Amino acid sequence: MYDFAYHKPSSVADAVKMLAADPDAKAISGGHTLLPALKHRLNRPTALVDLSGIAEMRGISRAGNAIRIGALTRHVEVETSAEVASAIPTLAYLAKHIGDTQVRNRGTIGGSVSNNDPAADYPAAVLGLGATLHTSKRRIAADEFFLGMFTTALEADEILVAVEFPIPEKAGYAKMRNPASRYVMTGAFVSKGPMGVRVAVNGAGPCVFRQSAMEAALSANWSPEAVAGIRQSADGLNSDIHGSAEYRAHLVTVMAKRAVAAAG
Ligand SMILES: Cc1cc2nc3c(=O)[nH]c(=O)nc-3n(C[C@H](O)[C@H](O)[C@H](O)COP(=O)(O)OP(=O)(O)OC[C@H]3O[C@@H](n4cnc5c(N)ncnc54)[C@H](O)[C@@H]3O)c2cc1C
Image (tube, rainbow, N blue to C red; front, side, top):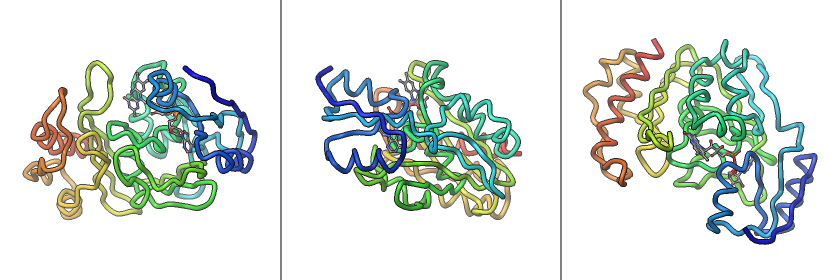
């Protein structure tokens, strides 16, 4: 580690001021991604702006046909929320299968979505449900939020405050996970509801993406068989020691079938 300043604001407005005043400052929520990066000196911010004292970024509530989850909400809180379980049980299922107990007790939905790791779980739910991202300065549709590997539409002094998920008629999630890290090798989040039929794929490519051929097939016939014959191209998919691009492409079809079956 090395020296850096530490700030703990109690409002979104103050946090934004601190980030705007220093272009090399970074926001920190659960720290489960950022702290390891600091320890390995992959990231060297001059200051950390700790968001954990900001009450307005906490909590889960139902507003009409949507569930709003504050960005500071930890994975375990989504996993065990009665509101989430009754409205979007697949989201509780997804949270329950992130990392391990330690990760779920510290990691936050806001940190995960802002970080946009290609192998993270929440980006699939955000894109697969057509959520709206509420930030310190605007609302961003999921389709405009995830721009590339570890890149989102958030600006340097912009904070993700909450995620609003429309409640679907049906939703399902399936993933093949790395047995050691538990990060996603390839996953698929499917839903049918106010945002239409959506299929979001995570883990396979540099950034979560929608699978439009599967969306068209499921719009005509919502069943696992509808996607069984659809092949994902391996072009541009991730290839590493854990699996080739071709393997991940194959998994897209397998995970989509399982996700539709889980959705019922
Ligand atoms: C061993 C291990 C296993 C894991 N396995 C999984 C897994 O299976 N699936 C999975 O999805 N994740 C997994 N994770 C990641 C975990 O879910 C993290 O919690 C998550 O990636 C980041 O959340 P955080 O709150 O810890 O963010 P932090 O580490 O605090 O921040 C991460 C990044 O987001 C930025 N940031 C944080 N909050 C905000 C905000 N509100 N607005 C704007 N920017 C913000 C920070 O500046 C930083 O760049 C794992 C992590 C570990 C250590």
